[in-house]
Image 1 (cartoon, helix red, strand yellow):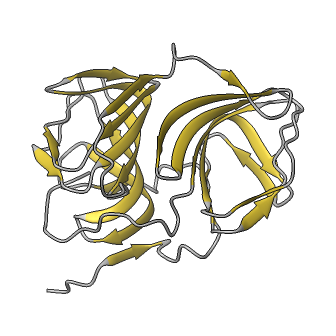
Image 2 (cartoon, rainbow, N blue to C red):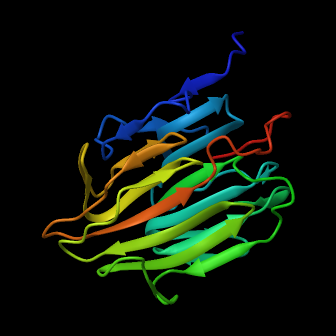
Length: 237
């Protein structure tokens, strides 16, 4: 049996732009009714991975432990486990060593990151982004909702009013974006809702919006940062 790791967009020194998922882009998971749209992956069933995961109504995933931690944002529907229900807009961090048995009643879609926790990052996080506070950004028209920060790695939602332009800037630790609403832009292109972008360390750009505005999930500082690494098999998403 080939035990080589599955490598999807595994060169983190390269810029990656993944369009919204089409009907043929979903890959079956080990659990019936649970499908994945892989964005990046280094490993087999246990892996450092970023994916969009879609649960059909009344589907579930077997109980499992996230030895390397799990970060997710509910995009549609209601995701549930034995700890509670997480409607669209909920941001969750389950730290390394936590376990759960996820399921959904009506169906849901979530954006998931696995094995991307730093050692010592052990605080559970649940944010209802539909009610959490927004703060002014660095330029007019920009609003920021912080989600998590640890040791120079941070995640946030950023809301762009129509026709907003940000300063040209550099990301020493890289940047990752999932466009949630509207159209995000920079000098390299336009990115509609559902687009995922990963820009390497020391990348530089001048982001902006036009008439549509945009809402984006942003993670910075994590590319090249020390992270826990998969070592033993654990069923995961």
